[in-house]
Amino acid sequence: VAGALGESGGTNTLYALRLALVGDPQKGIKKDENPLVRRGVVGDLRKIGDLGAIFVLRFALVGDPRREIKKDEDLEVRRRVVSAVGEIDSAIAIYVLCLALVGDPQEGIKKDEDLEVRRRVAGALGEIGGANAIYALSLALVGDPQEGIKKDEDL
Image (cartoon, rainbow, N blue to C red; front, side, top):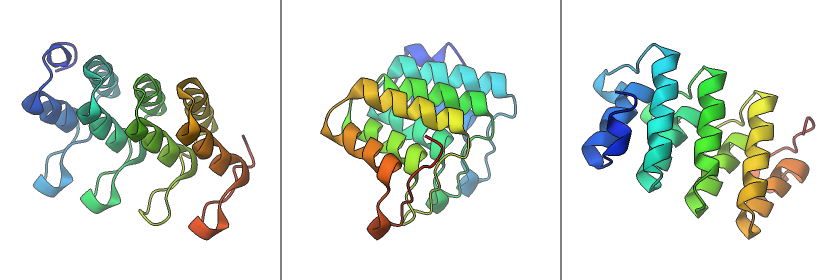
């Protein structure tokens, strides 16, 4: 899968890459067990670089409790996802990075427990820049008690 599909794009390609990266628990389809394959899939999604790719990358970075999708347990996969999403300058990319940085208690998403991933997310947000990225960084630095977001003491 890795390498060949990233060149073509399209709905079927994104779905095939999604299955390899995170599976589809609602249909009983498991992700590829080999983290090297999943890392390659992240590279393919980086090449595609559109909103559909961000949607799939989001699953690997933070999961989706409503769809019963768990984030990828391999730190290198998540680190590569941060790099890939950080290259796409869009409000959706900033939102996905913000989820990894501070989480979203209302969605049942927790911030990434790995400090290096959160630091990479902060760096990616700094590279993207703009008001939304600055807001996401400020959430990590000061928190937002009304939203249930605590400041990140480690950053």
